[in-house]
Image (cartoon, rainbow, N blue to C red):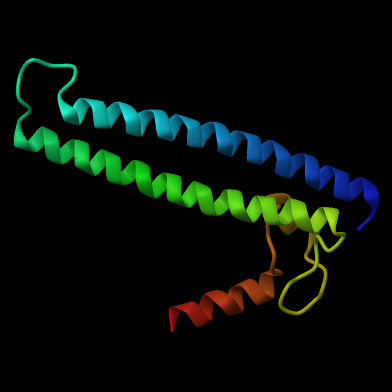
Amino acid sequence: MNKRELEHFEKLLLERRQALVSEMGLLQKTAQETTKEAAGEHSAYAYHMADLGTDAMEREKTFLLASKSGRLLYHIDEAIRRIRSKSYGQCHQCGENINKTRLEAVPHARLCIACQELEEQQKQR
């Protein structure tokens, strides 16, 4: 991969990273607001049990989204590290070049399509 292509993918990854960090900030804010509401700070009335259950479910969803976002952030950071170490675009499994179309769609990809499919099949067993 040439320098221009690496710069393009680094820019793409940095943009996605920034958007993800912003999204995670919103998730954190939402989680804090839901926790305050569950504690009853905004109301003089007691919450109904169903409302408390809904709040707990919303906090759990927020936690799961933040966890998924954290994993994606890790993969993006690893892809940026690979760009800087000049190993970006090579499959970790077979060593072949990853198709540029795949990298445009999933710029943090570490496996080519064939190796990714094989890994997913093995996970299903």
